[in-house]
Image (cartoon, rainbow, N blue to C red; front, side):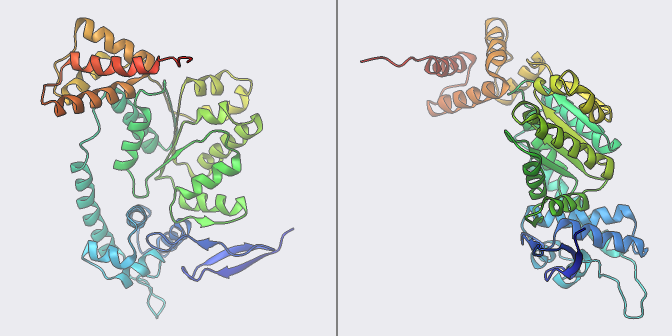
Length: 381
Protein backbone atom coordinates (compact mmCIF):
# COMPACT_ATOMS: atom_id res chain seq x y z
CA UNK A 1 0.00 0.00 0.00
CA UNK A 2 1.34 3.40 -0.96
CA UNK A 3 2.32 5.72 1.82
CA UNK A 4 0.41 9.01 1.74
CA UNK A 5 1.65 12.25 3.18
CA UNK A 6 0.31 15.76 3.34
CA UNK A 7 2.03 18.80 1.98
CA UNK A 8 0.88 22.38 1.52
CA UNK A 9 0.38 24.12 -1.80
CA UNK A 10 2.30 27.40 -1.60
CA UNK A 11 -0.37 29.21 -3.56
CA UNK A 12 -3.43 28.07 -1.66
CA UNK A 13 -2.13 27.22 1.84
CA UNK A 14 -4.44 24.20 1.80
CA UNK A 15 -3.44 20.55 2.29
CA UNK A 16 -2.74 18.58 -0.87
CA UNK A 17 -2.48 14.81 -0.89
CA UNK A 18 0.85 13.49 -2.18
CA UNK A 19 1.66 9.83 -2.77
CA UNK A 20 5.04 8.23 -2.34
CA UNK A 21 7.42 8.92 -5.20
CA UNK A 22 5.37 11.76 -6.67
CA UNK A 23 6.02 15.49 -6.56
CA UNK A 24 3.22 17.79 -5.38
CA UNK A 25 0.99 19.01 -8.20
CA UNK A 26 1.80 22.41 -9.67
CA UNK A 27 -0.99 24.93 -9.96
CA UNK A 28 -1.84 26.45 -13.33
CA UNK A 29 -2.02 30.14 -12.53
CA UNK A 30 -4.81 31.50 -14.71
CA UNK A 31 -7.18 33.97 -13.11
CA UNK A 32 -7.40 33.46 -9.36
CA UNK A 33 -4.40 31.20 -8.72
CA UNK A 34 -6.20 28.34 -7.01
CA UNK A 35 -7.42 24.95 -8.28
CA UNK A 36 -11.17 24.58 -8.63
CA UNK A 37 -11.37 21.62 -6.27
CA UNK A 38 -9.61 23.65 -3.54
CA UNK A 39 -12.20 26.42 -3.93
CA UNK A 40 -14.93 23.80 -3.59
CA UNK A 41 -13.28 22.54 -0.40
CA UNK A 42 -13.03 26.07 1.03
CA UNK A 43 -16.71 26.72 0.26
CA UNK A 44 -17.70 23.43 1.91
CA UNK A 45 -15.81 24.43 5.06
CA UNK A 46 -17.60 27.80 5.22
CA UNK A 47 -20.96 26.06 4.74
CA UNK A 48 -20.14 23.55 7.47
CA UNK A 49 -19.31 26.43 9.84
CA UNK A 50 -22.75 27.90 9.16
CA UNK A 51 -21.44 31.07 7.51
CA UNK A 52 -23.60 30.58 4.41
CA UNK A 53 -25.89 28.09 2.68
CA UNK A 54 -24.89 25.58 0.02
CA UNK A 55 -26.72 27.68 -2.59
CA UNK A 56 -24.76 30.76 -1.53
CA UNK A 57 -21.60 28.72 -1.94
CA UNK A 58 -22.50 28.27 -5.61
CA UNK A 59 -22.51 32.06 -5.98
CA UNK A 60 -18.95 32.15 -4.67
CA UNK A 61 -17.95 29.43 -7.13
CA UNK A 62 -19.62 31.39 -9.93
CA UNK A 63 -17.40 34.37 -9.12
CA UNK A 64 -14.32 32.16 -9.06
CA UNK A 65 -15.21 30.61 -12.43
CA UNK A 66 -15.87 34.07 -13.85
CA UNK A 67 -12.32 35.02 -12.86
CA UNK A 68 -11.02 31.96 -14.72
CA UNK A 69 -12.93 32.63 -17.92
CA UNK A 70 -11.77 36.24 -18.13
CA UNK A 71 -8.33 35.63 -16.58
CA UNK A 72 -8.86 38.05 -13.69
CA UNK A 73 -6.72 38.03 -10.56
CA UNK A 74 -8.15 39.10 -7.21
CA UNK A 75 -7.09 42.73 -7.77
CA UNK A 76 -8.63 42.82 -11.27
CA UNK A 77 -11.82 41.22 -10.03
CA UNK A 78 -12.08 43.63 -7.09
CA UNK A 79 -11.69 46.61 -9.44
CA UNK A 80 -14.40 45.25 -11.74
CA UNK A 81 -16.82 44.57 -8.88
CA UNK A 82 -16.12 47.85 -7.10
CA UNK A 83 -17.23 46.55 -3.69
CA UNK A 84 -14.39 44.58 -2.06
CA UNK A 85 -10.60 44.83 -2.21
CA UNK A 86 -8.28 42.06 -3.38
CA UNK A 87 -7.46 40.95 0.17
CA UNK A 88 -11.13 40.29 0.93
CA UNK A 89 -11.53 38.25 -2.24
CA UNK A 90 -8.35 36.36 -1.40
CA UNK A 91 -9.94 35.35 1.91
CA UNK A 92 -13.26 34.48 0.26
CA UNK A 93 -11.79 32.01 -2.25
CA UNK A 94 -9.74 30.34 0.47
CA UNK A 95 -12.56 30.07 3.00
CA UNK A 96 -10.83 32.45 5.41
CA UNK A 97 -13.39 35.27 5.26
CA UNK A 98 -15.15 35.91 8.56
CA UNK A 99 -12.82 33.69 10.59
CA UNK A 100 -12.11 35.61 13.81
CA UNK A 101 -9.28 35.20 16.31
CA UNK A 102 -11.68 34.25 19.11
CA UNK A 103 -12.79 31.20 17.13
CA UNK A 104 -16.11 32.70 16.08
CA UNK A 105 -17.34 33.05 12.48
CA UNK A 106 -19.24 35.93 10.93
CA UNK A 107 -21.86 35.66 8.16
CA UNK A 108 -21.00 35.93 4.46
CA UNK A 109 -24.39 37.57 3.72
CA UNK A 110 -22.97 40.89 2.51
CA UNK A 111 -20.39 39.15 0.33
CA UNK A 112 -23.05 36.95 -1.26
CA UNK A 113 -25.28 39.99 -1.86
CA UNK A 114 -22.42 41.80 -3.63
CA UNK A 115 -21.65 38.75 -5.77
CA UNK A 116 -25.31 38.36 -6.79
CA UNK A 117 -25.54 42.04 -7.76
CA UNK A 118 -22.38 41.79 -9.85
CA UNK A 119 -23.60 38.55 -11.44
CA UNK A 120 -26.94 40.09 -12.42
CA UNK A 121 -25.20 42.92 -14.26
CA UNK A 122 -22.80 40.57 -16.05
CA UNK A 123 -25.54 38.18 -17.17
CA UNK A 124 -27.49 41.08 -18.66
CA UNK A 125 -24.37 42.16 -20.55
CA UNK A 126 -23.99 38.64 -21.90
CA UNK A 127 -27.53 38.73 -23.26
CA UNK A 128 -26.85 42.01 -25.07
CA UNK A 129 -23.87 40.46 -26.85
CA UNK A 130 -25.95 37.53 -28.09
CA UNK A 131 -26.50 38.67 -31.69
CA UNK A 132 -24.96 35.83 -33.67
CA UNK A 133 -27.15 32.86 -32.77
CA UNK A 134 -30.21 32.12 -34.91
CA UNK A 135 -33.33 30.97 -33.06
CA UNK A 136 -33.88 27.70 -34.92
CA UNK A 137 -35.93 24.74 -33.69
CA UNK A 138 -32.70 22.78 -33.31
CA UNK A 139 -31.32 25.46 -31.00
CA UNK A 140 -34.54 25.57 -28.96
CA UNK A 141 -34.64 21.77 -28.66
CA UNK A 142 -31.00 21.54 -27.59
CA UNK A 143 -31.54 24.29 -24.99
CA UNK A 144 -34.60 22.49 -23.63
CA UNK A 145 -32.64 19.23 -23.28
CA UNK A 146 -29.79 21.03 -21.50
CA UNK A 147 -32.23 22.82 -19.19
CA UNK A 148 -33.85 19.52 -18.26
CA UNK A 149 -30.51 17.84 -17.54
CA UNK A 150 -29.35 20.78 -15.43
CA UNK A 151 -32.60 21.18 -13.49
CA UNK A 152 -33.14 17.48 -12.82
CA UNK A 153 -29.49 16.54 -12.32
CA UNK A 154 -29.80 13.70 -14.81
CA UNK A 155 -28.20 12.64 -18.12
CA UNK A 156 -29.74 13.72 -21.44
CA UNK A 157 -28.91 12.39 -24.90
CA UNK A 158 -28.94 14.41 -28.12
CA UNK A 159 -28.53 12.63 -31.45
CA UNK A 160 -28.47 14.15 -34.91
CA UNK A 161 -26.64 14.32 -38.22
CA UNK A 162 -23.50 16.40 -38.64
CA UNK A 163 -23.84 20.06 -39.64
CA UNK A 164 -27.36 20.63 -38.33
CA UNK A 165 -26.43 23.06 -35.55
CA UNK A 166 -25.98 20.82 -32.47
CA UNK A 167 -22.51 22.07 -31.57
CA UNK A 168 -23.39 25.72 -32.27
CA UNK A 169 -26.37 25.46 -29.92
CA UNK A 170 -24.38 23.66 -27.22
CA UNK A 171 -21.60 26.24 -27.30
CA UNK A 172 -24.19 29.01 -27.06
CA UNK A 173 -25.81 27.29 -24.09
CA UNK A 174 -22.41 27.01 -22.43
CA UNK A 175 -21.74 30.71 -23.08
CA UNK A 176 -25.02 31.76 -21.46
CA UNK A 177 -24.82 29.29 -18.57
CA UNK A 178 -21.12 29.35 -17.82
CA UNK A 179 -19.12 30.69 -14.85
CA UNK A 180 -18.96 27.44 -12.96
CA UNK A 181 -22.26 25.90 -14.04
CA UNK A 182 -21.72 24.52 -17.55
CA UNK A 183 -18.60 22.63 -18.64
CA UNK A 184 -18.24 21.80 -22.34
CA UNK A 185 -15.86 19.16 -23.68
CA UNK A 186 -15.57 18.00 -27.28
CA UNK A 187 -14.56 14.34 -27.53
CA UNK A 188 -11.56 13.66 -29.75
CA UNK A 189 -10.79 10.83 -32.12
CA UNK A 190 -9.23 7.71 -30.62
CA UNK A 191 -9.14 8.98 -27.05
CA UNK A 192 -8.25 6.69 -24.19
CA UNK A 193 -9.76 7.01 -20.73
CA UNK A 194 -6.57 8.74 -19.52
CA UNK A 195 -6.77 11.28 -22.36
CA UNK A 196 -10.43 11.92 -21.62
CA UNK A 197 -9.68 12.51 -17.93
CA UNK A 198 -6.81 14.89 -18.72
CA UNK A 199 -8.84 16.92 -21.22
CA UNK A 200 -11.80 17.17 -18.85
CA UNK A 201 -9.57 18.32 -15.98
CA UNK A 202 -8.22 21.09 -18.23
CA UNK A 203 -11.78 22.34 -18.85
CA UNK A 204 -11.77 23.69 -15.29
CA UNK A 205 -9.00 26.12 -16.31
CA UNK A 206 -7.33 26.19 -12.92
CA UNK A 207 -6.90 22.43 -12.77
CA UNK A 208 -3.75 20.65 -11.73
CA UNK A 209 -0.79 19.36 -13.68
CA UNK A 210 -0.09 15.82 -12.60
CA UNK A 211 1.61 12.69 -13.89
CA UNK A 212 -0.92 10.44 -12.17
CA UNK A 213 -4.46 9.99 -13.45
CA UNK A 214 -5.85 9.71 -9.91
CA UNK A 215 -4.85 13.31 -9.16
CA UNK A 216 -6.73 14.58 -12.22
CA UNK A 217 -9.75 12.47 -11.32
CA UNK A 218 -9.74 13.89 -7.78
CA UNK A 219 -9.60 17.41 -9.25
CA UNK A 220 -12.61 16.66 -11.49
CA UNK A 221 -14.69 15.17 -8.68
CA UNK A 222 -13.69 18.00 -6.37
CA UNK A 223 -14.65 20.71 -8.88
CA UNK A 224 -18.07 19.32 -9.87
CA UNK A 225 -21.25 19.53 -7.82
CA UNK A 226 -24.93 18.78 -8.33
CA UNK A 227 -25.32 22.35 -9.64
CA UNK A 228 -23.12 21.69 -12.67
CA UNK A 229 -23.97 20.64 -16.21
CA UNK A 230 -21.34 18.60 -18.04
CA UNK A 231 -21.71 18.62 -21.84
CA UNK A 232 -19.75 16.02 -23.80
CA UNK A 233 -20.04 16.74 -27.52
CA UNK A 234 -19.18 14.31 -30.35
CA UNK A 235 -19.30 11.49 -27.80
CA UNK A 236 -19.96 9.00 -30.61
CA UNK A 237 -16.22 9.23 -31.34
CA UNK A 238 -15.60 7.21 -28.18
CA UNK A 239 -17.71 4.40 -29.66
CA UNK A 240 -16.56 4.79 -33.26
CA UNK A 241 -12.82 5.55 -33.12
CA UNK A 242 -11.60 4.32 -29.73
CA UNK A 243 -10.78 0.74 -28.91
CA UNK A 244 -13.54 -1.33 -27.33
CA UNK A 245 -11.71 -1.26 -24.00
CA UNK A 246 -11.27 2.53 -24.13
CA UNK A 247 -14.92 3.08 -25.06
CA UNK A 248 -16.04 1.03 -22.08
CA UNK A 249 -13.64 2.82 -19.74
CA UNK A 250 -14.68 6.30 -20.91
CA UNK A 251 -18.40 5.66 -20.56
CA UNK A 252 -17.92 3.99 -17.19
CA UNK A 253 -16.01 7.07 -15.99
CA UNK A 254 -18.85 9.31 -17.18
CA UNK A 255 -21.27 7.08 -15.26
CA UNK A 256 -19.04 7.34 -12.19
CA UNK A 257 -19.12 11.15 -12.43
CA UNK A 258 -22.90 11.08 -12.42
CA UNK A 259 -23.18 8.53 -9.62
CA UNK A 260 -20.76 10.44 -7.39
CA UNK A 261 -21.78 14.06 -8.12
CA UNK A 262 -25.40 13.80 -9.38
CA UNK A 263 -24.76 16.62 -11.82
CA UNK A 264 -26.55 17.08 -15.12
CA UNK A 265 -24.83 15.46 -18.09
CA UNK A 266 -25.52 15.94 -21.81
CA UNK A 267 -24.10 13.46 -24.31
CA UNK A 268 -24.37 14.78 -27.86
CA UNK A 269 -23.36 12.97 -31.01
CA UNK A 270 -24.42 11.55 -34.36
CA UNK A 271 -26.75 8.60 -34.74
CA UNK A 272 -23.66 6.39 -34.62
CA UNK A 273 -23.74 7.11 -30.88
CA UNK A 274 -27.41 6.11 -30.74
CA UNK A 275 -26.64 2.77 -32.39
CA UNK A 276 -23.55 2.24 -30.24
CA UNK A 277 -25.35 2.84 -26.95
CA UNK A 278 -28.63 1.09 -27.71
CA UNK A 279 -27.83 -1.54 -30.31
CA UNK A 280 -24.12 -2.39 -30.18
CA UNK A 281 -22.54 -5.52 -28.77
CA UNK A 282 -21.84 -3.66 -25.51
CA UNK A 283 -25.48 -2.65 -25.17
CA UNK A 284 -25.93 -4.28 -21.75
CA UNK A 285 -22.84 -2.54 -20.31
CA UNK A 286 -23.71 0.87 -21.76
CA UNK A 287 -27.31 0.40 -20.64
CA UNK A 288 -26.18 1.24 -17.10
CA UNK A 289 -25.47 4.80 -18.26
CA UNK A 290 -28.34 5.06 -20.74
CA UNK A 291 -31.00 4.10 -18.19
CA UNK A 292 -29.97 7.01 -15.98
CA UNK A 293 -31.11 9.50 -18.63
CA UNK A 294 -34.32 11.50 -18.52
CA UNK A 295 -34.26 13.03 -22.01
CA UNK A 296 -33.52 11.49 -25.39
CA UNK A 297 -33.67 13.82 -28.40
CA UNK A 298 -33.27 12.60 -31.99
CA UNK A 299 -32.98 15.64 -34.24
CA UNK A 300 -34.22 15.52 -37.86
CA UNK A 301 -31.59 15.20 -40.59
CA UNK A 302 -33.18 18.17 -42.36
CA UNK A 303 -34.49 21.08 -40.27
CA UNK A 304 -38.15 22.12 -40.65
CA UNK A 305 -39.13 24.80 -43.14
CA UNK A 306 -39.74 27.26 -40.31
CA UNK A 307 -35.99 27.07 -39.50
CA UNK A 308 -35.14 27.82 -43.13
CA UNK A 309 -37.54 30.77 -42.97
CA UNK A 310 -35.94 32.02 -39.75
CA UNK A 311 -32.51 31.93 -41.37
CA UNK A 312 -33.86 33.70 -44.45
CA UNK A 313 -35.22 36.54 -42.31
CA UNK A 314 -31.84 36.86 -40.59
CA UNK A 315 -30.29 37.65 -43.99
CA UNK A 316 -33.22 39.91 -44.99
CA UNK A 317 -34.26 37.48 -47.72
CA UNK A 318 -37.77 36.65 -48.85
CA UNK A 319 -39.10 33.30 -47.66
CA UNK A 320 -38.07 30.65 -50.19
CA UNK A 321 -40.75 28.83 -52.14
CA UNK A 322 -41.02 26.49 -55.09
CA UNK A 323 -37.75 25.64 -56.82
CA UNK A 324 -35.71 27.78 -54.39
CA UNK A 325 -37.04 25.83 -51.39
CA UNK A 326 -36.46 22.45 -53.08
CA UNK A 327 -32.88 23.47 -53.90
CA UNK A 328 -32.22 24.56 -50.30
CA UNK A 329 -33.67 21.35 -48.85
CA UNK A 330 -31.52 19.25 -51.14
CA UNK A 331 -28.43 21.27 -50.24
CA UNK A 332 -29.08 20.91 -46.51
CA UNK A 333 -29.77 17.19 -46.84
CA UNK A 334 -26.52 16.53 -48.70
CA UNK A 335 -24.17 19.11 -47.14
CA UNK A 336 -25.78 20.17 -43.87
CA UNK A 337 -27.28 23.29 -42.31
CA UNK A 338 -23.83 24.69 -41.47
CA UNK A 339 -22.80 24.69 -45.14
CA UNK A 340 -26.10 26.35 -46.10
CA UNK A 341 -25.39 29.22 -43.71
CA UNK A 342 -21.76 29.52 -44.90
CA UNK A 343 -22.96 29.80 -48.51
CA UNK A 344 -25.45 32.47 -47.44
CA UNK A 345 -22.70 34.42 -45.72
CA UNK A 346 -20.52 34.23 -48.83
CA UNK A 347 -23.41 35.32 -51.06
CA UNK A 348 -24.10 38.21 -48.71
CA UNK A 349 -20.46 39.33 -48.89
CA UNK A 350 -20.37 39.05 -52.70
CA UNK A 351 -23.58 41.03 -53.23
CA UNK A 352 -22.59 43.64 -50.69
CA UNK A 353 -19.26 44.21 -52.47
CA UNK A 354 -21.12 44.51 -55.79
CA UNK A 355 -23.64 46.87 -54.13
CA UNK A 356 -26.50 44.65 -55.26
CA UNK A 357 -29.30 43.08 -53.18
CA UNK A 358 -29.00 39.57 -51.82
CA UNK A 359 -31.46 37.29 -53.62
CA UNK A 360 -31.98 33.54 -53.84
CA UNK A 361 -30.62 33.67 -57.40
CA UNK A 362 -27.40 35.22 -56.06
CA UNK A 363 -27.26 32.56 -53.36
CA UNK A 364 -27.66 29.76 -55.92
CA UNK A 365 -24.85 31.18 -58.08
CA UNK A 366 -22.49 31.11 -55.08
CA UNK A 367 -23.62 27.64 -53.99
CA UNK A 368 -23.31 26.22 -57.51
CA UNK A 369 -19.83 27.70 -57.79
CA UNK A 370 -18.69 25.94 -54.63
CA UNK A 371 -20.34 22.67 -55.67
CA UNK A 372 -18.72 22.82 -59.11
CA UNK A 373 -15.34 23.41 -57.48
CA UNK A 374 -15.86 20.41 -55.21
CA UNK A 375 -16.53 18.16 -58.25
CA UNK A 376 -13.60 19.32 -60.38
CA UNK A 377 -11.34 16.52 -61.55
CA UNK A 378 -7.60 16.75 -62.03
CA UNK A 379 -6.69 16.73 -65.69
CA UNK A 380 -3.77 14.74 -66.98
CA UNK A 381 -1.37 16.71 -69.13
